[in-house]
Image 1 (tube, one colour):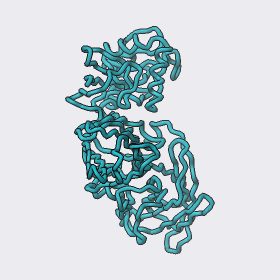
Image 2 (tube, one colour; image 1 turned 90 degrees about the vertical axis):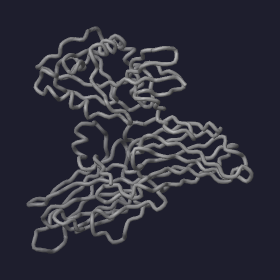
Image 3 (cartoon, rainbow, N blue to C red; image 1 turned 180 degrees about the horizontal axis):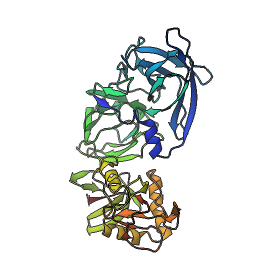
Image 4 (cartoon, helix red, strand yellow; image 1 turned 45 degrees about the horizontal axis):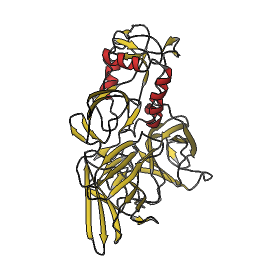
Length: 452
């Protein structure tokens, strides 16, 4: 059973990631009798970007002491008031939105009851989920709940399908079959088989948009089944050495050695950056394609200031005509980070250890030599602008020029295990980091790519 780790710290996450959000206020006034005084709860449901809640919205209140349901309400639209009576006490609140197309028991008693997708997917809409703990005492309370999409959106186009084919299906496995009200995925051995429809283009079939939970385990199998009058039944499949996770957009593109070409998107609006997954149907591993530890097959060697596999390439070292080492820089940055001689000497190293970008871990601070390469490559603000154009494509943070200031000092980035710092977009050099001021931090990761 897989726990969604984002679920239970929504406000903490917002403190570190600057996001735009919309608010929908839901009032839950108390109206039930009992020995404990009834208190009023206000809920603000928050979404990223310009997303708005999809109605109906359902709110469930479970008593913290025994996990029993004590109140629930369904909000059909923004004009309809919610009213759930809650006496003084501690509760776990769970909110779900966009529930049309999902199956939920008519009788809810416990927070571990399941929301299911009977066929492993739905084409109705994307489900959102949020939760919060509240302790009602002497005063009314306002609760802010971050709503997260819990499904991926899959769309796909199949090209070069034989003309006699009458049916095409895409199967994704192993997918989770259910999500509990308290935010846990379960039943991870299922599959989702999504039918495709022919388009007005010869040999082109379209997989309509479909929503599914993430996939279980560390691998995902994609299978395309084509049934034709003369060609019979053909199945081409591929094993991706990664899981599909909710709220992460995946961009799928690949081809079959047998001649069937597939492109598509597994996308999630307004959330994590897109993950590009090139692959060939009928061949295993395909997310890059990784052929060794830190080595990936590519059709062409990437250039600096480009996007490779949804990561930003900052520097390229050619090994030979067919091989290159890419220095990737992280999409995420941190501000006001202590140096190794400052007030919090382990802060930068802790951030580096915990960082993971899509399928890549083992990110680190730039070495002194790498910092020198980055500074020399992007001392010109125009070249820094090119780098940031690549950042825009992956929805990453802007790399800031040293001409700007934070807390009254010029912007510099940590390197050399936080013992040194360096600038972007201006003259300067790698120099020892001070113990009084703070710095910005971005991370790097080296991968080797080999031309097919």
